[in-house]
Amino acid sequence: MPQPTGTDSSTSSERALPAELVKRLAARAVAGGAPSVEVAAPATGSKIVDLPQSSIEDIDKAFATARIAQREWAARPISERTAIFKRFHDLILSEQSEILDILQIETGKARTHAFDEVGDVAINARYYANASKSLLESRGRNGLLLFLTQVNEIKRPKGVVTIISPWNYPLALSASDAIPALIAGNAVISRPDNQTALTALWANELAERAGLPAGVWQVVLGRGSNIGGELISRADYVDYTGSTATGRHIAAQAASRLIGYSLELGGKNPMLVLADADIKKSAEGAIRACFSSAGQLCESMERIYVHTEAYDAFVKAFLAEVAKMELGADLAYNSDMGSLTFDRQLTAVSAHVEDARAKGATVLAGGKARPDLGPYFYEPTVLADVTPEMSVYRDETFGPVVSIYRVDSDDEAIEQANDTSYGLNACIFTRDTSRGRTIAAQLNSGAVNINEGFIAAWGSVDAPSGGLGDSGTGRRHGSEGILKYVDSQTIAAQHLLPVAPLPGMSDETWAQTMTFALRAMRFLGVK
Ligand code: NAD
Image 1 (cartoon, helix red, strand yellow):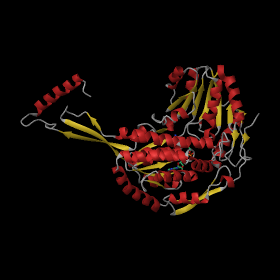
Image 2 (cartoon, protein in one colour):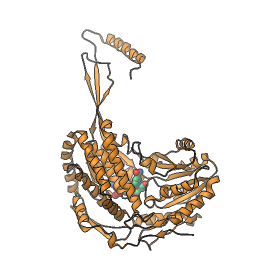
Image 3 (cartoon, helix red, strand yellow):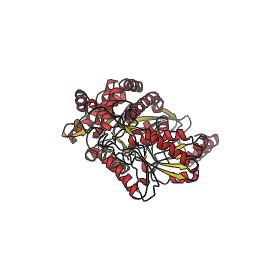
Image 4 (tube, rainbow, N blue to C red):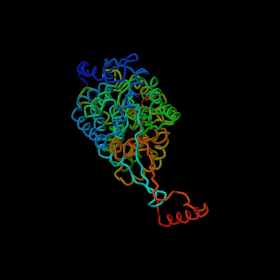
């Protein structure tokens, strides 16, 4: 069996971040009151930073600063707030080489997958800078009594929003969620994962370079289990991205305070290859769909259902593409897939593959770690003959492992794709787009991509993104991605006559007059 080759010839020291940069970024965090933690680069095992951690006092200080800064920030015209994020957009593109290095060193991912994050932040900055004014502006609404009741709906920022983000897409999931919250007039307190804190701190510094006032967006640091509850107990809204198990815990904490929340959680995403699919495009698309960021992507495909007429050709083409993949995490566009980010990811991925192998699955490609390339590298892995008693059948792997299943009809593919408690992302490969759309509507999934794995829907940020079922609640992107960060307030002014009987009018006459008015409004089609 051909195996993916390694491209990485650079040394650990060539992949180190400048000490001055690391020191400057770490110093930006509202942290230092708790013992620091050492963070190492996944691809090499070398130390990156002793990261300061936030104490309760640090968190109190961050919230006190945020509450003062938020009032001044929300009072600014929206055009000033959006102008800052237009500059932020330009800066992130012009300064991309520095953040690509940080992202790669902190996560171990390939540069091409790091660039997806830069693109994501630029797209969200552009979208919300251009779309927010009309989404947030005051709107006239129909009043109770025609002409006499004048109603306006205004949007008020929640106040201080806490964003708790994971380590797998650390730029996209910290900055892109903060942008709409900030443009809506909130202050934001971000808690990035320790492993990828420098990425979030870099974005935070860049926003201030673009003109964001100090104190409006702050970063605190700490393990979620240590400081998550402290943040939720002080926040006005919580935005969480991570596993379903932690998401349930966060939801319970937020619910007990009656604050709003959105949860972007896990997935076990299906890809459907229909009988008429273009085999070459499907095989190439499956590489992007399954192995971006070594499969440590919530939207990654972990199950492929192939129509029996396309099965043999697809498997052959897909395996040929997998064999061509170059593994490595050097700081250049040389590699097709990088490293896993943690020891625990390597353990989880290996456990899924070994469990499947022991229970009779066939390993068509990969199926082993590559310690010759770095401590947590694992080969892109393709399994067949996977059955329900194997963990990989139903549980999220969150690594470069995909199982292929043969199906006899579209209906069978739909039924199997929907046999999951998750519902985050799905994709369909077919030459017949309208047939693809019909099938898409039958999939229980927050997003369905046709002839692409995830990035077509994910990158189209005018449309909402989020999960069904165990994949979460709430949406990022589109109008929902900013309106979740505001409360609607209705202001109704009553003119000339009160909503009550006129002087000398009995309650009964009032009721008859209102009955007549209600019938008239129904007749006239008043909304
Ligand atoms: P995890 O839930 O263990 O951790 C995610 C983050 O939550 C970490 O930074 C952790 O520090 C923090 N955390 C843990 N316990 C916490 C608590 N009690 N309070 C507050 N924060 C806490 O998940 P993980 O395995 O590290 O991350 C991968 C998971 O995230 C996968 O399931 C993946 O699908 C999901 N994910 C979803 C999306 C999405 O948009 N739907 C995006 C990325 C990742």
